[in-house]
Image (tube, rainbow, N blue to C red; front, side, top):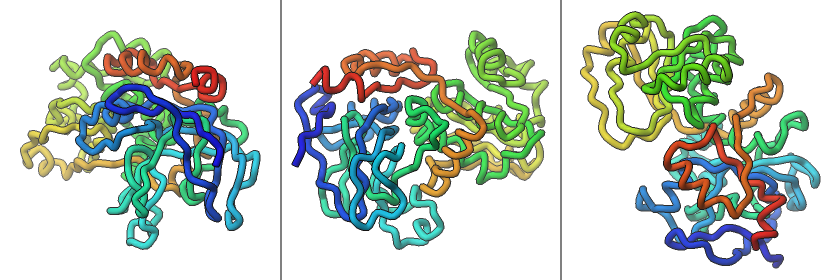
Length: 349
């Protein structure tokens, strides 16, 4: 079995290499060239959610080139550009799996720090190779650069899916995006690609120029400014809320038109404070959404390639990861770190 070099973390200390499984008959093996750094990686490293399994190899936004396929693989060939996102397995037999929303399968297996059904641990993309069942592998279009493809597999589909599934993807709609980080900037880009008029809603006035001049938003609201919020009452068809820190949602509900939808994709841990009357008066909806199924993720990546939707990234070598994590914790990145695995991991190893 060949050695696989990767970034193993045991109680947040870097240790040696780890070997992945052999290529099975339905597996695709690929050389990892880039891997995005998601805020979830930071939570997993520090065991913030109490479910991390050490040693841990983080990373669920990994892309590269196929090096081997199993004897029963049908969709991929050696040399294809591919990627793996947040999940690597599901039960394949429940109603959600049958409906191509494996992301809501009760037996969903995430890409790193979890266990397959046979009890073996999943290792993520801070590694020079990956083996995954072909069902959970995404084909990367030739016209989409690999360095920007990784973040689309998590941040991209996380905002694409609610825009599509809640019907707030129509040209001319007024869509709000709360927060302008890794998820928020992708929500702006996808909503604009759908033809929407996009309003960024933020607590930081300093982000207005970036939102409008660089990311293409149509307007900007300072959520702490009561006059601005009052003037925008009842103007939005939908809102994608990407903020994971605790924040008031009642003012956001007020921005919605009748039948408006507020969809939360940030993992706010504290219970929401929301009187039912704020929803009843305008038949408004508050909902949540988590990544997307494999079919939808492939649809998203194809749409992104066709419409030139790309994340804003900062490419870093593998030995910069600890610094990148420290900066990520302080929101000091525009807007996604991507590790250059192909050119830096072996050097560090």
